[in-house]
Amino acid sequence: MKHLHQLLQAEIERSLALDPSLPGIMATVELPKQGFAWSGACGLARRGSQEALTPEHAFRIASVTKVYTAATVMRLIEQGRLNLFEPIEARLLPASAAALRSAGHAPERITLFHLLTHTSGLVDHAASENYMQAIKAAPQRRWTRAAQIDFAMQLGGPVAELGREFSYSDTGFILLGEIIEGVSGQPLPAVIREQLDFKRLGLKQTHFETLEAKPPGQLRAHQYIGDWDGLEVDASCDMYGGGGLISTTQEIATFLRALLRGELFDQAQTLAMALMTPSVRFKPGDFLHSALLRGRCWGSESCWGHGGFWGIGAAYFPAHDATLVTAYNQVECNAHTAGSPEQAGLMGRLAVILHNALR
Image 1 (cartoon, rainbow, N blue to C red):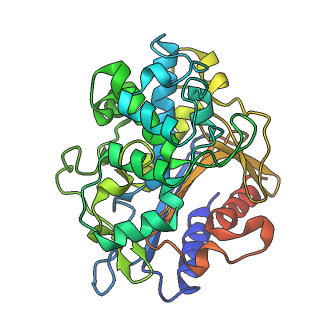
Image 2: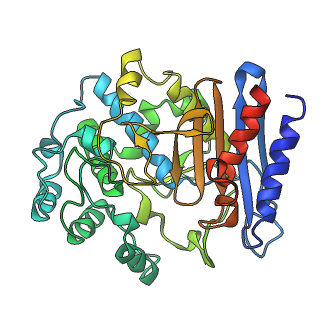
């Protein structure tokens, strides 16, 4: 393990060199059993500046937020305030239930489990070209949850058979955010912070952008789509449970390890229930998805993890109690695709380095 930190730093620097358009890369690796923890960064925090990117820079974690939302739902389930297999109809605001019905959905049949495992048949509004064009046309528009649900339903009816097919959906997690607020009587950020015990975990930089106060002295990494600076876009376009959190690679690693060691739940069976994977049809390129996380393998190493739009990746390898988190500050880049099929992308290449070090 002596030179592992050098190998990891060299790999992120090599990955940065693969793409001159990529401003920077951040990564964290934690191996508590080996007494090893490393966080590294290279490149710039913002194009055209001289500000070096560091592991302390915070960023939008996009869909990795879904893991925090799902974990909060599971906490409410173990407290008896929700049921994993209950229909969502009675938990939604009347306007949301009506919007779903207008598009041909059956909220009396869709369950929390369907939403969590992306088997509800709901469209993924955030992935639609229409939604991206709407954002580009008015980047400072303040989106509401209701506006996003209405937008999604206008895109059409079910895109997959309920409970029979995996179809990733940001829209489903917006509904979960609404359900969390309804059952708790509190704003979503406050419930997530309380239920997942951010204070005990020491998550000082993790917060919902614009919905909570920015931590004092926080450093922000700019994140890009091509030449477009994402910080010029109002955060509300990806906010209400499917996205919205700001964090660092270090704090994501802390949260993910605690979650998958069962430290955030009162009962061991809650984690087991959260990791149940439904037997459904998957399209090529999809990964098995439990109510909490995606399951996949890199080479011979299996892990639970999730990714986010802005080039975020997070994975936990149970066999080694190893946590790996990476972040580019550009959506599309060569560093994300370079490598052989079994280790494509920086996450895969770092996973191979870890595998070799732990043999």
